Length: 161
Image (cartoon, rainbow, N blue to C red; front, side, top):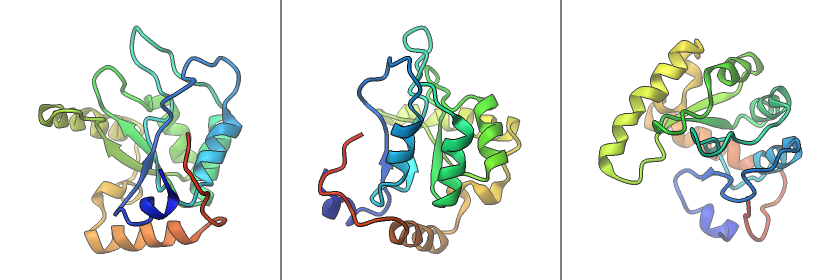
């Protein structure tokens, strides 16, 4: 999508949807995505799906440290087949100071029930509520998005993950 279009949206989640079975380290790819000023949340970061795809690997400490440096969030995708990020990675995200977004990757209204899994993972990883963007008042969330958009370089012509 064009960066100027993304800038008109309230909030943008960027997620990888290609090359999800790579076995080599994807740290540079993640850091590049986080540095895109059009994106505030890195969605279902690992890209895993139970019994289908193990997900991408990276130096997660570096990825989450970069998210924290840029004040961006990483998503907990509570969809039952994903549960991405797993609790062990969430503990690293907490240690590095990354913000967290609770999501479900819902494609149907009934799938919003998976939000309980996202919240449970956050609780198991001891993520503080003040680090979870879903708990921000709307005015604070809008201010955070504005702040995150101002960090980084000029927007790219096209966003591609």
